[in-house]
Length: 162
Image 1: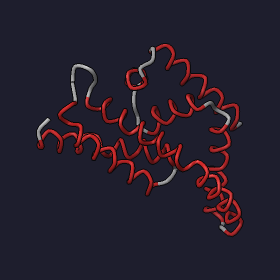
Image 2: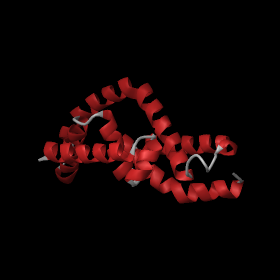
Image 3: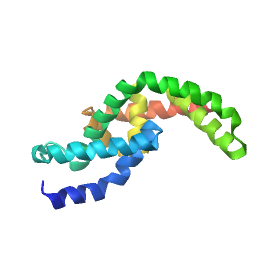
Image 4: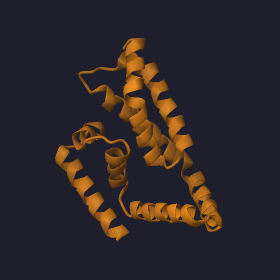
């Protein structure tokens, strides 16, 4: 992959990839860091990229998903502590801010009822705006498996939010 191809890759995919990471993490700063790390890894590994194995988009999302998983493993304890502290600050917000926090809380509680695999496909489908076939390829799973997982996750979310 040449420099101009890499620049096109960034122009074509950075915004959607940032959307996925932001949606998945709920933290714009962390999403920006993960986006930068994704493209840094892609730049370093660009000579190993094989378009016969996966599309550029699938390759990038695989890198991002691995970084996201690594980040989640490393930060799980710190994140729980931060959420505990942040929950105490919610009472000081007003009107629309309080409503937004409350809606986010309802969504987070609903998402927490999903399995890790279900949360992942929801994030890939709606945060990254990937199609179900793209998700299946990214996760290296059967299309029917991913379709079922998305369907079950959405059904559970609807039930939890009603």
